[in-house]
Amino acid sequence: MHYRTLGRTGLRISEIGYGAWGIGNSGWQGASDEESARALNRAIDLGLNFIDTALGYGDGHSERLIGKLLRERSETVHVSSKIPPKNRIWPARPGTPVEDGFPADHVIACTETSLRNLGVDTIDVQQFHVWSDEWVGRGDWLEAVERLKRDGKIRFFGVSINDYEPHNALKLVESGVVDSVQVIYNVFEQAPEEQLFPACEQHKVGVIVRVALDEGGLTGQIRADTVFPEGDFRQNYFRGDRKREVEERTQKIIEDLAIAPDALAETALRFVLSHPAVSTVIPGMRSVRNVERNCAIGDGRGLPQEPREKLRAHKWPRNFYRD
Image (cartoon, rainbow, N blue to C red; front, side, top):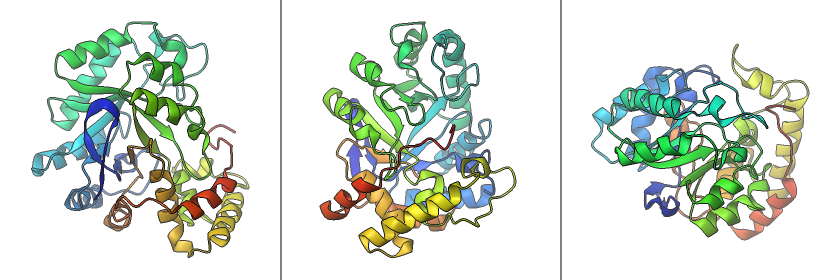
């Protein structure tokens, strides 16, 4: 496993991190706690040392599974979590007062709950689960963050940027108060390269990439006739004619790069890791098989320039969460 530094935090974290939404068994359906535990342990065996979770993943269930892992393993594992907005609105909407999302008492109370779920004294990176740049310089959230740092409850502060709004954190990055950002970046969604990544490099802000495989769209496993488990969020994400669209676009990538269909996921992850601003990518992993396949990609090699340049033509701006 290859390691990178998370911005100015100094934390050396694995290129492949563990996205722990799926093991919370909310949104993504079908995870079993037994397999999740095996997958988490196998990831640590393979050198992974960064896990991203959230209080909202299964109402703390994901955090509690990770807490069990931390008690059983002696290795250093860095954990990032997220505070849900008090108004429970994802993503943050324009004009929403910061007091509706992250008042100081809510920030502190949620962090205390996450600390109990994880069974730790300190969270390495505590994040807001949504963000609006309108909140820079407003409200009392920053006082809460500074207090949590001062009290040793968190080490660093980050935000998870709204879906497909990489520009909506530029003021925060430039303010100097944020240590990391989490953002959607993949072959289809290349917009973070335009403004966000250069700003993060300039201000030494770590970049955690989520949805690198487009919720499964860039694995090559989504076809026009794919059926998702009842209650799985992907039923809506890939609704209507979207599965056919995804299948056609991924087939074009496979043909353009002359790769095997089962090499698409690796190619997509290597594309993300090839950008120097990226600190880690956190694919969701619910099985030992996926852990082994993904961790093997964290070898520091990224993707050669020629296929990387070919993938530029496959950007596909859209927002399947809202459109």
